Amino acid sequence: MTESPRQKLLHGIPKNCAIIRRAISRATDTSAHSGKPAPRYPNLLAKNDVQQTSQPQHTVKKIIIEGVTESGRKFRPSDWAERMSGSLSTFGRDHRIHYSPLLLPTTINGIKCIIIDPQLKEVAPDMFAYIMGWAANNELKITETDEIPEED
Image (cartoon, rainbow, N blue to C red; front, side, top):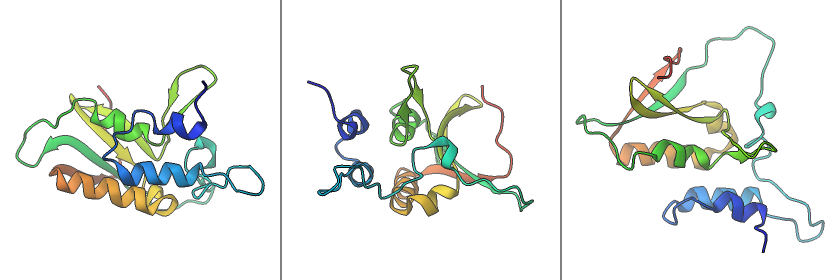
């Protein structure tokens, strides 16, 4: 039995991540009349759909959530960044995972992190609110930066 696109996206997202699961379900919901997807967030998953302008503008700060608590403890599970970023990822024809430029996992100075593009707040406000609330509840370090540090 083949999985539907919704099942593929939901696979691997913990059951307790209700907001992410609901957002994916809404984004992949099909219209009763046309049978075509009726995405709630049309530009959420496509890499090329992220708005880019040729006009010079002020530097957009990225939000970095580090896998370290405010008290200095390493956050567990160790693959939390990949799990969180996987909620907006797709699988390409090359059978590899492709993360959305709006939510990227990375490792900075040996610490697992996610980099959030502020545009996620406009594209998927409920997902953005969930991620920021989740980070605050788990007391993770949240910073805004103009430059992304080099990956390890």
